[in-house]
Length: 216
Image 1 (cartoon, one colour):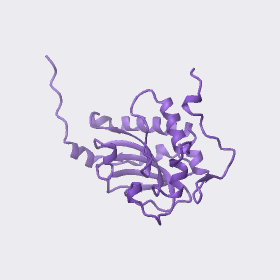
Image 2 (tube, one colour):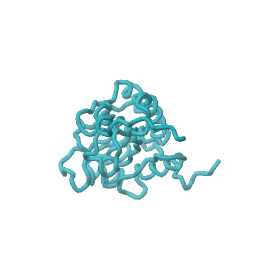
Image 3 (cartoon, helix red, strand yellow):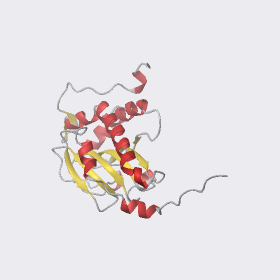
Image 4 (cartoon, helix red, strand yellow):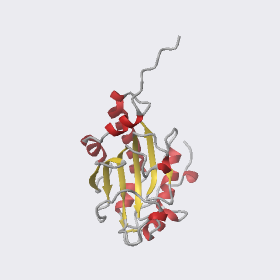
């Protein structure tokens, strides 16, 4: 006889209760060294922005190209934390609460976004291809060329035991952040001149694309 399953908490209750603890910032900072941490809470996201030193304060929510403000100041960085509401994140069909790590470039459709995301061999496109080559199981990073959240990896927590939320979240964040560092995206974001979308240091090289790597 199949054992009876333990009753699950309502989705809304679990999502509302999930809040990023200080350890999220402590865990992420060594991977995202050089970026400025900014707390985010109260909306669809709960966690920490890690923004380029030349960026201004983060403005939420993230926008699509069609909703962008032409006068918005260029900003790049990462978010590490949780999606606690679907509002504004319908494009990833979240099952909140979810662990999430994403890179952002704003405004969507701006000059910086076009250079870093839009071009065929752009920094973000080659990075996504490289990380996906390394990822042998889901969830994988997904590219969103028309969004400010340009590459995003997320994992629903609904199937996890509540007492394991912190433990499994840490595993997700460590694995994801390690890929960002290995791909050199963190270093290359820091090297960007936000006014033109070009790297200040010519010696910084892109990771090899998946198709050009020899298999072990």
